[in-house]
Image 1 (cartoon, rainbow, N blue to C red):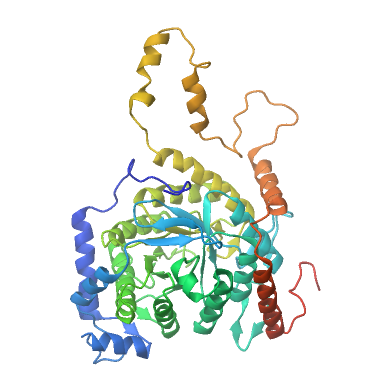
Image 2 (cartoon, rainbow, N blue to C red):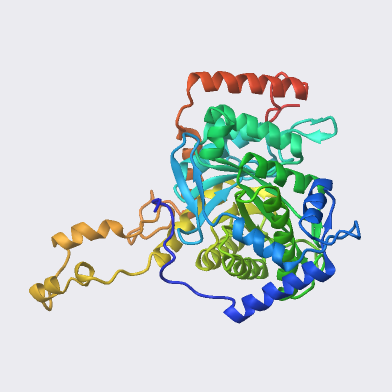
Length: 494
């Protein structure tokens, strides 16, 4: 088991009973068979029609339950991810534990130097990539789209490609990317193949994955499905996730929202597995509520975490790797609200067992990113790992011989047993446990800023080979030319 994973053998808790899981599954099949799902991809409709789905109404495809069962049989139950260098990073199998990822390119950036919110620049993305690479409990990158201060080219956004290039230069951990369209995905695969030494090596040791997003309620858009079909063809791990909004794009009940989410996931999965049985897929959703006062899609709502946890249990009943969400907040700044919401999400998410957990340190309804919040959540994940590590009970840990030897009124401080075990205690890097306060004492908030800036300025990722760097330089030159730039926009430039 990789050193950063969490052991789920003890303790655990359940949100759904087995009966509730069965009822949600049966309700999902009923929706797929009777209501159907709107597919906009001609290739997907042809695949589904050829397999026996009802496509007589072009606006809706009705999928029989046996096609769902077939897809669940062929979808891989385990996916291994690697580092940029081809070393094993972690496994997604429903058992090994939760793996958290953050985004280096938020729409807006909470600057740790000034404390102010502003646009995100390419240089910020470089800093956050190094931060992700440095933190032990942040194990992968979630590369978002349309988030950098760059020109729009040919009516489309180029920032996803630029973001991935900068991340690959500055971090080794696996990366999953949103993509605006199929051409963007193709470019990203080519870029990662430069690192791997070819697409076949990338397929065998994937450190890159994509994502596709159904549109609630029950719409499989053309670009989303075609991205998934391309990933299936190339053997690239792909995340399928929707964002049903209870009270707006899904029923205003937890069960109804979960059925919408599951129907979107399974209908998409069927198309992918028909394209290529055994194609690696990670499934999940971000179901939340519409806040009826503000109409926002709430990222800090406890209902989001409850539904993500319940959906994790449902999807794990299919033995599929699950995509989760935790460590995010509706707060605009790092403070009491952000700490409470992120910690609550981490606790519930890891105890329900999601495999790949994204959106760490996404704030203000998924519009703001904060380097300091990434560092704080990294610390909170470390705290939660203490709980999920459980308690080993054996001859060594019971220490009965030592207790008998020392007896009452003794001290265990100088014992060899203590020296061998105390380093297993969790040690905070931000939280204050001091008893005697000195003028030099620093509070947790100041420590957080200091640690964040220190890591951003000093962390050095593993270097890439010179020939790889030269190829990346050529790609970057093409990107800049396409954008009509000599260099990326800089902070403070007019």
